[in-house]
Amino acid sequence: MDVLFLKYSARLFARPSFIEGIGRTMDIGTTLNEYNGNETPEEADIESIRSDWKAVGEQLMLAFETISK
Image 1 (spheres, helix red, strand yellow):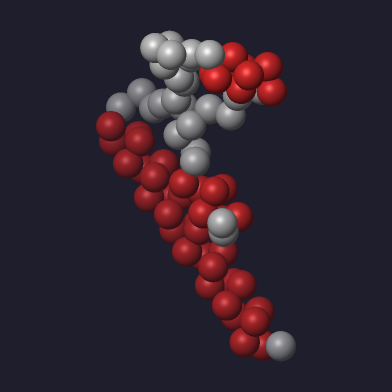
Image 2: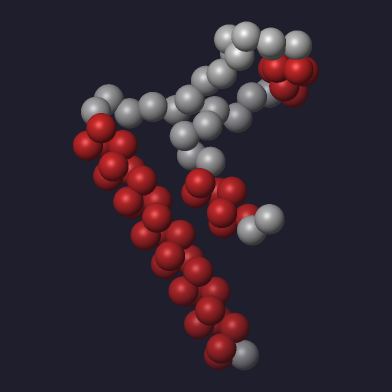
């Protein structure tokens, strides 16, 4: 899987520790789910758009570096 995809698409999901990961295997009622949230929907939109454009910029830089070689 593309590293950039994981870097930008998973920003809303909290990354659990190893112990929390083990606990999630027994979490039948999904009570341990955590998300990184924003105060307002507008803030969430701004963060998402910023993240999307940052990913686009990094992909363009990789493409330019590949072409220039």
